[in-house]
Image (cartoon, rainbow, N blue to C red; front, side):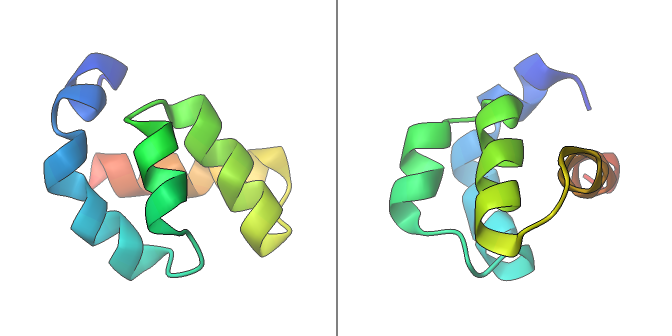
Length: 65
């Protein structure tokens, strides 16, 4: 998914994001506002993943939309 589309649908996606990655807080999602780089960083922080793993997760999620 194009990052502009991801940003545009952010509010609609937050529920799905919280289901998939339950360790992310509402504050995390409010600050992210569709910025995938921030989301990747928060996934690394919350789950202890490498940057590559976090990017893979976000890409997998966005590919299923």
